[in-house]
Image 1: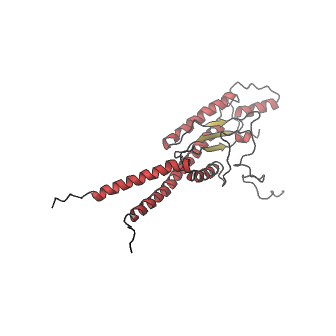
Image 2: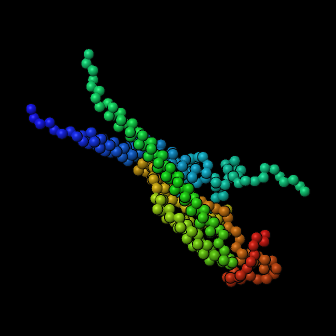
Image 3: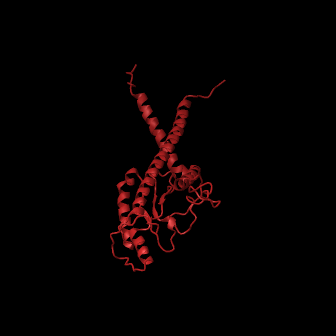
Length: 98
Length: 168
């Protein structure tokens, strides 16, 4: 009967290899899924669109806007609502006449 | 009856669950960091815009806007957004002038957040704006008053004036 090989550290080595495999798989999907399968890419694009719009205007929405911005149009969602109202504060009622 | 071997099933389940958990964690980590840097960018733009909109040396020449822009850029660079991973060229300014919309006078910054979540596509550029409208400069007010009183006004001469919010 031959001498038994020492197996201390085997579990640790297996753990390291498995984590490496998982990290590699994760990076593979992270880098390629969006371009090749266009599944996560579409999802991320939708989230990004909402993120970009909300960041600029502090409003919920996903309207795609042209960048760089051309400030020649009076319409600006940060200031003017679609119905023509304003986002600025103002008196709810007219001040009473003295 | 012969059964299929099930050894390794737990390992595969662990791998799949771990990848899902990692993705979930990284997703919120990335967006959280992007939001934090975004708030900081808003603050830096506001500080810069406030300097630009309130800077006044008493004259009303175009040089006053240039001086205000330089001072506003100095204030903006005090908050080093690049050290937080934001990518941008420089802060931009809208100055009042013919054909321009007065409400858009101020500063704006277009930048890329530190983590681009487009999965290989182009990242989301964010736009931070701070438009408050620039107050008329003291030199401008003085000229209006002088012209109203029938005097001429030389725009290129600096005056030591103490006019504040006089309604002009």
